[in-house]
Length: 177
Image (cartoon, rainbow, N blue to C red):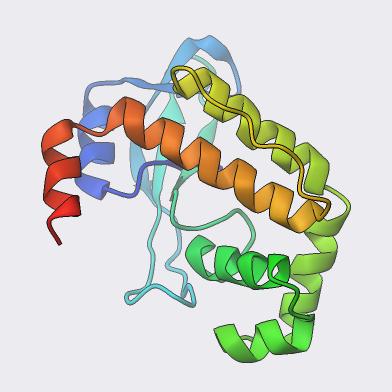
């Protein structure tokens, strides 16, 4: 599976222009449209999601193109999962988090356990994204809580990507809301 931007029109135009690289064969291959995968119900998204499939010109491997609003092998929207992580960073336990995001407690406990052992790796990855995307990025100091450290790293990366890739006109329009 390949993560692509959330805008299906832009994904289609990139597929038609053969500008999405193949993760299986690296620089040699590019992906083109190859039908659709099965429809999925994703909690937190309004409509059912029917991801696009793509096939590599060079190695003939097919890939499912997942929009960035969902995570691999998760039936919940990425924003909903991030809300659970944010609540955990504020000190809530898995039952309180589950009640707040309206997801079964066992599911939330699974999310939290899954990332608990990877907090530092994920934090480092997001800080790497911030450094690559940003200009004069200030790396946040650790807070003593690994969950809050992750939250700070994600916010830093988001700000760096936003400042690098969003047009000033879009930023002005958002600030007027």
